Structures are given as C-alpha cells and as structure tokens.
Length: 374
Ligand code: UD1
Ligand code: UDP
Image (cartoon, rainbow, N blue to C red):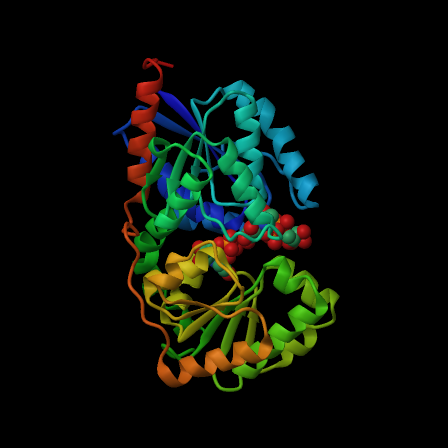
C-alpha cells in the first residue's frame, strides 16, 4: 500500500481534503491516507467542528503550530513536519489550496525528495501583496503533479513552464464537499432557526488582511454592511482575525449594536452553507465562498479588485467590486432591485473531482515505481 500524506491546517483545507481522503480510503486503490494537521487554525469553530461534519478521520499527527508571523508559522510547520515525513516515508505528499501550511508542506516534502501533488494548483491573482499568491507560486514551483479547478489555472501553469503532462484539469474538490452535504444542510434549515426568511437576508464574510487589517478599511466596510442592513438583515459570521481587529480598533461594540447586522461566531460548515444557499446575496473576500455561491446560483459580491478564480466571474455569479464602501452599498442595492447576476456551473464542478484526482495519483505512482507490499 502506498502511503499518501495529506496536510491540512486552516479552515478551507478541511472541505478540500475530506473528499480526497474518502476516495483514498475506498478499496479501489492500493493507497492509504496519512492525515497531518498543522494546527494553523485551532479554535473549535475554525477546525474541530469540520471533522465530524465532513467525516474527516482524526489526524494521524497534529503539529500544533498555532498563530504567528508569516515566517514563524511557515517555519514551525516545516520544522515539525520534517521528522514525521522522514519517519513515515510517504509515496507522495498532497497539499491543498494556498495557505501557509500548504506551502510549508510542499517545501518540506520536496527537500526530502518526496514528490508533491498540489490540489487547486495554478490559480493566480497576480497580486503578490497577498500572502496566498506567494504560497501558490512557491507551491507550484516545487510540485510534481498539478490538479486544477479551472482552465485559467492550466494556462497559468503552462505560462510558467510546467509540462503539460503534469497538469490535470480534474474539477473542484471543494464543490465535491458542497454537493455531498447541501442536502443535510438544507434539512438543517439554519435561516429558519435564525428567524430569517428565504432570500430575506445577506450573508457576509471577511478576513483578507487587505480588508480587515487597517482601521479605515475595516471601518468603511463594516459601515457599508450596517447601511445595507437597514434594508436587508446581514448575517456576519466573524473570522477570528476580523474579530481581533474589530475589537482592537474599537469597532466591535458599535457594530454589534446595529439591529440588522447579526454578528456571530464563525459557523459550522452545514450551518454556513445552509445560510449561503438561501441568501439574497453574499458579500465576501473568501476564495472558497466565491466558488460555492457560483454553484448554488447565489449572487456574490467579492470585496476585492482581482480574483484568482476568474471562472466564477466569467461563468458564475461573482462580481468583483473592490472595497469602497459607497460601491459596496450601491452594488447591494442593485441586487435588491434587479435580483443579481445569474450564472452557470463551471465545467467539472460536479462532485467527482476527488475520485479523478486519486485515480490519476494511483496511475502516476504505478508508472513511477514498482508496486510494493509495504
Ligand atoms: C488563513 C490563510 C488564508 C485563508 C484563511 C482561511 C495564510 C497566509 N492565510 O488566514 O489564506 O483564507 O486562513 O480562514 O495562510 N486565529 C484565532 N484562532 C484560530 C486561527 C486564527 O484566533 O483558530 C487568529 C489569530 O489571532 C491569528 C489570526 O487569526 O493571528 C490569523 O490567523 P492565520 O492563520 O495567520 O491567518 P488567517 O487570517 O486565518
Ligand atoms: N465557512 C464556514 N463557516 C464560516 C465561514 C466559511 O464553514 O463561518 C466555509 C465556507 O463555506 C467555505 C470555507 O469555509 O467552505 C471557506 O473558508 P475561508 O473563507 O476561511 O477561506 P478561503 O476560502 O478564503 O481561503
């Protein structure tokens, strides 16, 4: 059996890793997952909650790295991961997405001559002020196998000189999780539990440093959400980075008092997708939420100037609106009046990405080395 190490660490990693682990555990392949949690995210509602909801197994190892500066966090993951990889000798290291743990995992493995597969490879915002963009570029520079979610990613990788036979357009594993769990999420009826009517509220999430790390930026965005909430309740599950800043900038109390603005803890996956599914619109700077709203057909206003996921704009329901408070209010009003952008589902976002990925991984490993009975 070939051991496949999979590293997760931050919230969006769990939805992406779950279907891959499920596929690896099926008896169709002589492969076995070895799950490592870096501990980049550690609050119950940023990590543990997703394990039971998504059916993820308990990690085989937990690195407990916690928060820190960019370099500290990356270095801690690398330092703690290295001896584990030396011990377990995986046939392949699999990393997902674009967080610090992703880059640290790829770099540690490749330096030990362990091949790396990157799931969600090739996405580019072309904005190197984003820590995630640097993580994507570095991860792809050292990866051996590239699994992409949209055609733009294939083009980006080809432009960076990645050989064609290493790039596999397999679809979107985050959507595998969404399609598997949207039924149970609908039955949960989270909007009704919160006293909200279908299409009678907006859902907001924010956590990009460019939006939440300055007083003026965060204040402007929160004021625009407050203004929108005068016409339409806005549910705002607050990411820990954002909460820390709202409190630190003295904005928390005032925001919490606004009656139409419902500040909550970060929500579980089923609660969150249940809310997203029935929302009139979503306002976000999340990567994954841009994709999920496209699949659910819910209008999405992305509070950024660019996206590494252009298919959500070209094919889906996403509009890039930047972070100017007046524009945010204006675009939300347009949706209230006109119903918002309609879209279609991008190719291969069909719930079967993980099985395609694991099939290719297995074939690649078989071609690469003789089968062992380890
Ligand atoms: C990270 C990822 C980002 C991803 C996001 C998903 C990087 C560089 N950033 O951003 O790409 O979109 O996760 O949510 O990898 N904190 C807690 N509890 C936790 C986790 C974090 O309180 O469980 C607080 C800490 O104060 C920490 C801050 O949030 O310093 C930021 O956490 P960090 O993991 O560094 O970055 P995120 O903003 O969460
Ligand atoms: N999500 C969640 N609860 C929340 C907010 C988001 O379960 O309160 C889910 C969301 O549905 C998506 C993932 O978390 O599956 C996105 O993670 P996040 O926005 O933190 O990271 P990004 O995608 O921006 O890297």
